[in-house]
Image 1 (cartoon, rainbow, N blue to C red):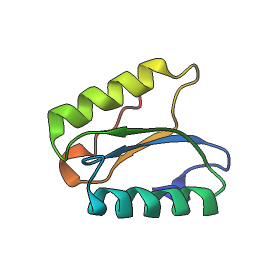
Image 2 (spheres, rainbow, N blue to C red):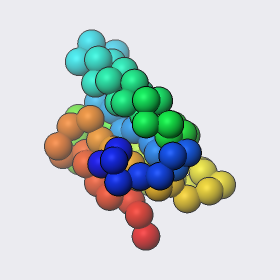
Image 3 (spheres, helix red, strand yellow):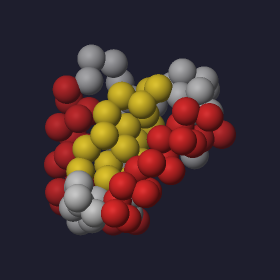
Image 4 (tube, rainbow, N blue to C red):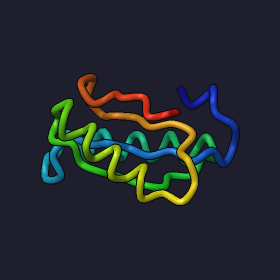
Amino acid sequence: MLRALKPRSKVAIIGGLPGSINAKARSDGYREAIASAILTLTALAWGDWEREPGRAAAHRKQLSQPARLSQSAGTHHDQCINLQR
């Protein structure tokens, strides 16, 4: 995913449970990858490892962004929802 984006593209992360050590480790890994790819992380939202809470969090974050996101990523397969229009 990161290779397909241009430098300074805007991305967001939808994580699992905010207090979960696994969710923190995954979001930390995504942040490192985003930074090394010279991308801009615009939002981090929590989706509780579930599809619908992840979708709702993603839409809230996307709607609150003044500029369209280039890509969104979920930290769990049920949350990997493409929000590009």
